[in-house]
Amino acid sequence: MQFDIQYRPAHSLCKVALAPNESVVAESGAMVGMSTNVQMQTQSGGLMSGLKRMFGGESFFRNTFTAANGPGEVLLAHSLCGDMVVLDMTAPGYFIQSSSFIASTPNVNIETKVGGFKSFFAGEGVFVLKATCQGPGQVLVGAFGGIQELVCDGSLVIDTGHLVAWDSTLTYNVGKSGSGWIASFLSGEGLVCHFQGQGRIWIQTRNPAGYGQAIGELLPPRSG
Amino acid sequence: MQYDILEKPDFSLVRVEFHQPGEQLLVESAAMVAKHSALEMRTQMQGGLLGAAKRKLLGGESVFQNTFTATAPGQQLWFAPGPEGDLEVVEMDGRTPIFLSSGAFLASAPTVQLDTKWGGAKGFFSGTGMFLLVAQGTGPLFFCAYGGIHAVDVGPAGYICDTSHIVGFTGGLQYTVNKVGGMKSLFFSGEGLVCNFQGQGRLWISTRNPSGLVSFVHPFRRVQSG
Image 1 (cartoon, each protein chain N blue to C red):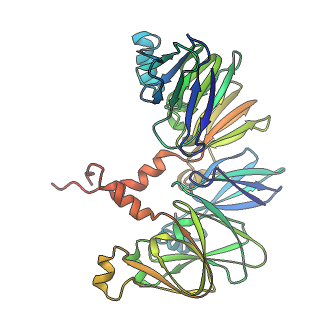
Image 2 (spheres, rainbow over the protein chains, first blue to last red):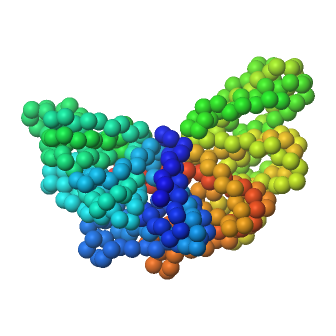
Image 3 (tube, each protein chain N blue to C red):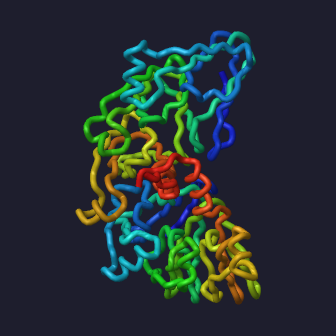
């Protein structure tokens, strides 16, 4: 399987080339186009995992695309403007902010994890995804805005609204950004994620909630 | 006339340089960004009142379009679509018509005829609108999309495209609107209906869809009190 990301960074589109009988698992609604020999199957993976995923900010269902009778291709995109990146699976795996997940090779196990009760206030939901894999595999993640790879060497603080994914070798906890709650609130930074350890963190250069607030305020009020 | 597309793909802009006096370009209303002051602009309803009304109501284009006419060699014109995103130009060969979905038309040479075509009731379900704009003739045709524009050369195997991502396609293609996967997928896959293209030709797909942005922003609107 080959992921080829085009039209970067703002309107990125990922062309997934599938070998015969190969499959890719994609987030619901991510498919833009595909060859006619690709078959789609919708799975919830059981009621509990489906529900958990829904609370994680993703959709209840995921789709598996399989190339039948020869090679095929699937075009995948995020709904918001921004870049994408392919993460090669490592033994420890990754944590992924739930709305950043777009697709993975079928051997990647995606679990919905409780991200700590504090992250409830962080605008990104209570859950994060944990991607793990036996052997080689890939995950496609998408961002709102551009993507930067930061290296955490010891400790690093990231705004929760800018998180895309991070190496699961890192420990993290969500907390206040300043010395006190009032200072944190007034700084406009609200809640941040404190990372500890050694690993990589992928951030998005724009915060979707920040964008939504900036635009939403300017629009006429809705009726309900 | 010579043209190039600048700032592709995110904030594309067309720059045209006219070589001969009398050369013309028909541009969608409000798309002009800049022009030489002596370049003549005339606003008209193409095809008269009825033709314009039909295009507005059925094809999603504006009632008025502007015709720019060069009065001297070397005059320049710049124009751009409203939403951010890509634009594409095709030199029409006089044989193959191009079908554009509602709102995709940006500009064309006066030798390109524009009309609306009943896309069949399937258009209603496909998100492309009930009607398609048909361009026929010779000369450049400019069209645009929200997001990037991805061209797919459709061969005998056909191609499947999400209904809300179609920008346009050449005349050699026919499509049917289908569901993808089983009944469960129809309701739960988030993919809804797709267009299944068959035949030989080129299909243009947009990499984003404005309704994705709109449905994201909507919950951030204030709620009307009382």
